[in-house]
Image 1 (cartoon, helix red, strand yellow):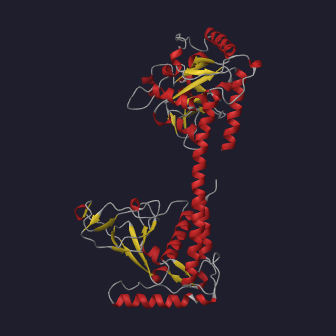
Image 2 (spheres, helix red, strand yellow; image 1 turned 30 degrees about the horizontal axis):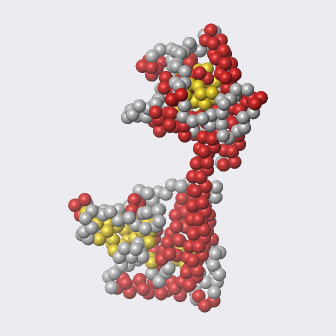
Image 3 (cartoon, one colour; image 1 turned 45 degrees about the horizontal axis):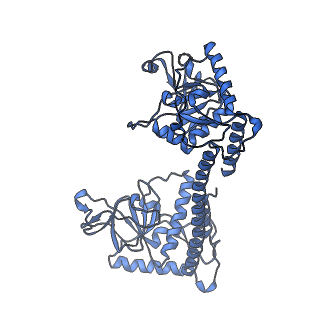
Length: 482
């Protein structure tokens, strides 16, 4: 993936150093432009249209961040703009009936395409921004920028209005955007609230007007190219996810891999699983299961190869549990103590599986681990979240090199053959698997399914060697798509 935000930041950095534009002698010198700006502002102060500038310290050439082209000059940003702070209005002073002028309250009024969303109006405006002013969100969600297209609006205290004089508005917009990128990088993505002096005291590189226009044209072109890349990358990601789903759907219907006669058939695998489960039951390693009815023709959703077999999950899983302890669920809280710092065993939650156990894990002591004997994990098990928004996800438990136990809100499955854990994780992620789990939720307020629901679900079972080929093929194709 191309990090287009970093590229935008880099482009603006080069633009503000004069490295994206050529020098043309007829452009003149930015010092002349600066003098005109000061004259214009002085006349507006005399007319009472803007306030007099605050006093600024003299610019020290030794403190400027980089060397500018000879025709450019460093200026205090506040010397070339007028800054209007916003004021909040009480609810009685604004309306939703289009009465008065628009009232812009904050970052929620900024749309993705750079325009301003208007949903409030006021007949009692006090803090004005006018057409071609730059609106900067300075509190709440900080750093949003837009060039105002409306003739006149009232701005709330979360917004600053920035008016340029004798300077390209788009150049000023890109300059501010470059500063926002710089603050984000320095603050690692977070921008604190912006005060008036934070804006007024900025050091701004000022080129001649004609060079400003060339810079704007170049940046606009490059950003347009990056917009195209963003669109393609979004489309690619979307298509990749769709393709992954279609590959899984094809795989569990026997359409992704060849059927090879020497593989035998699923009946052989099912017989072996049944016999091994009987031995585990005899030895007390797994409980005896209530017999379920055979799969009926009405339950079969699609055709599968003749060497495959429709089975229920209970027929092929050697162990299915959802946080089983030596006592009722009501006693679990009393017998299980969790810790934020490492302890005897890892207490595995859905969020840990989703994040890859990167941070914020939970732990339990040995007494709790012993109490949760039937929920122990050793690595390789199939974990299915069974409540809320995580339903439909499937995880293969990694070996974390320490004792582990399953937390609530997930179901643990084990199979005789480890590769079947992966195969059934793909079944769950398929379109068919999603429909199966949705049917088990019964219209409850909170989406959920139980281990009893899971046991009876009907799934396609290929011969073991074909299961291995399916898993290998899907893993390789998904790696390519990633």
